[in-house]
Image 1 (cartoon, rainbow, N blue to C red):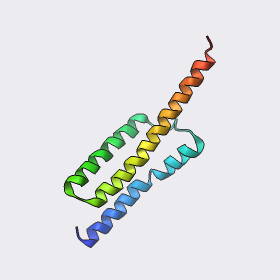
Image 2 (cartoon, one colour):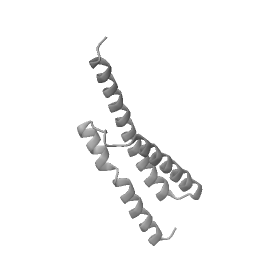
Image 3 (spheres, rainbow, N blue to C red):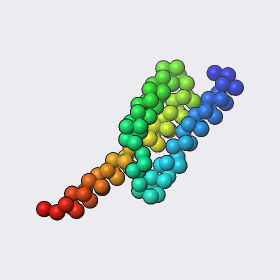
Length: 98
């Protein structure tokens, strides 16, 4: 990959990876993920896994790196989503009584 292609790849990877950071920060800070779709997050994670595999096949460290970081952020969001869903289920169970 020549210099210009690498710069474009790094910029693209930075943009697509950083777009997840505000959502992770908000979910961590507020503890709320009700506005996030589990299906969307799973589909996004699947796409990122495929990009990592593709980048590995092409031996392109920019593709692998950017998508691996993005995948890590989506996994964090999925963890928060699961945690919040469990908390809501527990609250519902305890509020219904015996």
